[in-house]
Image (cartoon, rainbow, N blue to C red; front, side, top):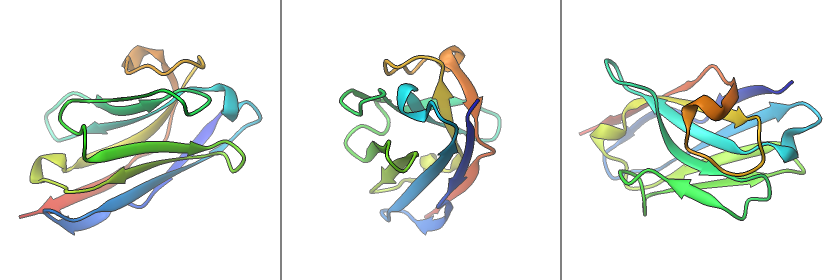
Length: 124
């Protein structure tokens, strides 16, 4: 069992940066692949970044590639999403999720545990 709590969301101007954090509880955190998803109003929840259990493999959605960076700290049971050069289309609720597998994946169906989400709003 893994419990996830996101933080770091907020209101930022276009071109700005935010760093999202996800604090996890549970003994097996280091064995799970982790992902960041987002859901904008009226849209499907989509994976924007994923990281494998060692942190050595990362995947990104094309829309955020080069602007977002996912990382993890297994010792402190945390995963992060650094978001730079934010755009209005990045406005969404961002969710941290843990997959019931170690290899990185962007497939939503592979994720078993979810946080409550944190709102990111980018103003123009």
